[in-house]
Amino acid sequence: MFDRRELSTILNVYGRKVAGGEWRDYAIGMGAEAATFAVFRRTAEVPLYRIEKRPKLRNRQGMYSVVAAGGQILKRGHDLALVLRVFETRKPQLVE
Image 1: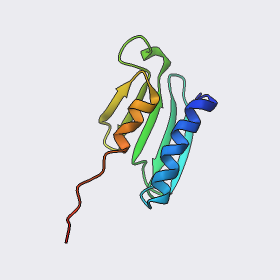
Image 2 (image 1 turned 60 degrees about the horizontal axis):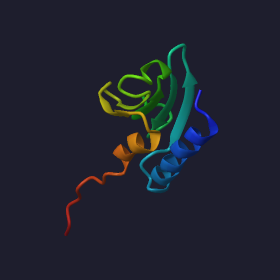
Image 3 (image 1 turned 90 degrees about the vertical axis):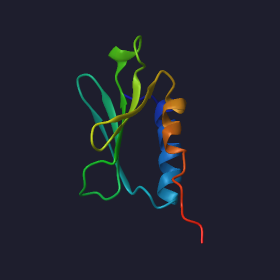
């Protein structure tokens, strides 16, 4: 499972995205090989992103990863805060 520090880091990012109107719901799951924090735009949809912790990958690519809805790994690493920076990049917007 995620420990208190990891969950706090994830919920900080989640809170900013909820305040911005991008995300609305989340779910936490635990499997045999990974703990997952799934983010939803709407409750009835598939998750937009999954933040996964896979302890078996600790000595390889890193145990934290952000996975998009299509299954693409957007970022993977050893430090959760650095991995979650993938959400900090702002999308370009048209300026009037």
